Length: 353
Image 1: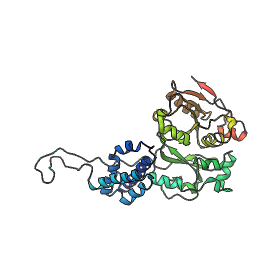
Image 2: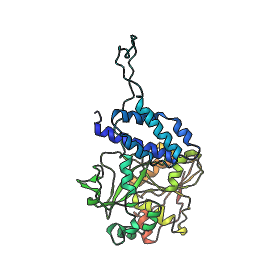
Image 3: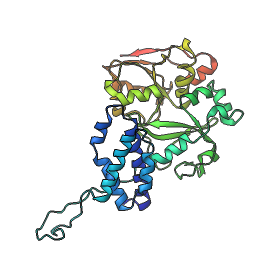
C-alpha cells in the first residue's frame, strides 16, 4: 500500500527533527563524522522540493541544534537539496532534454514508507510539554505514585515519568476509543531504541491497569532506560563495564531507577548502575550488542512464566561475556510490591551459568 501524502509529510517532518536532534547530541569532535553522511540531510531538501516538507518546518527543526555552525551546515544541506533533486527520473529508453543519447532507466530513491514509530516532533511535544509530577500533589497520579513507594520529585529530576495533564491531540495517543487522558493512562514513560535515542512512549494506567503503546505503531526493540542506561546504549562496546539492572514493567523500572538507585543505599544499587525496563518484544540482539562486555547484569523480571522467558532471552544473548544474575524467587511479588512491604532484597541474586 502506497503511503498517503499526509503520511509522507509526517515522515518528512519527523525525519527533519530526528536528524537535527542526532546532530545536536553528537559529542564534540563527532559532528564532522555525522555530517559526512550529508545525503541524509540533503534528502530533506528533496522533500522540500517535492512538497512533503516546508522550509519553515526544516528551519524549526534546526532551531533544536544549539551549535551555530552545526545549525548552519544542516540548513545548507537542506537548501542545496531543495535546488537540485537527488537523482532525476528518466523513463527507460528516453534521453534527457537536449540530448539524443538513449540512457538506462534511473530512478530517484523513493520516499521511505511511513515509520513504525510516532513522529518525533509530536512525541517531543507530548513528553516535554507536560507538567512535573511533583507539582500535581493531591491528584490521582501523584497519589498513586506515592502509594507505590515512589518519589515524584525523583521521577521529575531524572525525567523518568511525566504527567499527562490534558487530552492529547494525536490519533495515535488513544486506547479503547478514548484518548489516553480520558482513559486514565496518564503516566507517560519514554521509550528508547538500541542506541539510546527517543523513539516512543508508554502510557501507564493510574491504578490497577497496564500500560499502552501508541496506536498504529510498533514498540518492539524499544525499552525504558534511565540516563545512565541511555549513555551506555549510546557508547555500546566502547563504554565501561558496569552494573546493569533489567526490570519488567513501569513500577519495577521506576523502583530501581529512582527509589532504590537514588534514595536507598542499603539496597546496593550502585549510583552508576544502568537501569533498563523491558516488556514483551523489547529485548533484541541489537540491544544485547550494546551492553559492554564485562558488565554485571542483574535480571529482575517478574517471577512468573513471562518474566522467566524474558530472563532466558537476556541470558542467552549475554552469556559468556557478562556475569548474569537472576533474582531469587519472590513468592509471586514483583520488586515494587516488595519495596512497599520493606522486603526488597539487595542485589545480586543467583548467578546464571
